[in-house]
Length: 291
Image 1 (cartoon, helix red, strand yellow):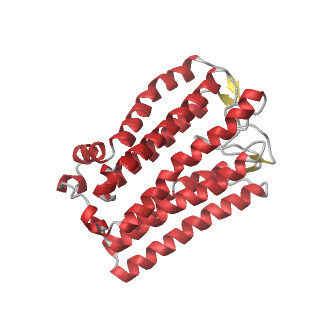
Image 2 (cartoon, rainbow, N blue to C red):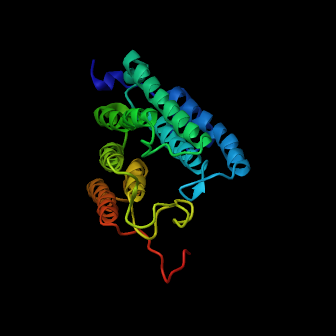
Image 3 (cartoon, helix red, strand yellow):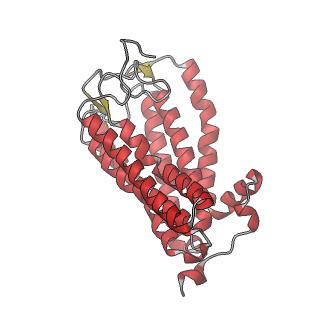
């Protein structure tokens, strides 16, 4: 059966700008990713409460700061995939292999969060922590789980590229494929580099206490988290450019705009990656102030 024959027709509401309808479509198309995102959203409450009650500090910040950031990041990632699931072949969504894969991804997310929250509860670091034989053994396993959950973006990129029955504008389809594919490739490269280092800092102070507001990025040295951030958000930045191009440009110009956007975003990841490895901050302190 062809990919076109496998495509599942979506109700018109799934393509509308009505948020309740879009949420319903996300829940119907990818209930596992959507459900995991909702669970993580609910978990924000106890994490914020823990941060308010527990004043322990690790690397210059509250021990619960990292679990909170990972919860937010994974919520955005999972719900984005649940939204994009409407453009996967319908036969794929119904297949046993895909259901098993999606459960593996969700399980990887759950284990990652248990690990990160558990380390916070013990007042220690989850990443780069090889201080005990147990942590030294678990750290590589968590890296494998991180690659597994990120692989969903590449699976989606390939499936959307092959599903010609989705009715997508060619430029927007290309932006989805490039954005999702870049997310996997670039994230693995940057995260893989970090995993082989003693920390995400390169030069400067090994603390987040004086980092950039909200993000915590180092301002007195290199920080590979900057490149990691932009790499993981390729699946948002490139499709947003593709959506705008498909609405306002002709077909050929829109395709060129998507390729240009992918090059710009990829170059931004490469620039911040090299910048960090050279020990240079993304946004340095100006005039000795942390503003």
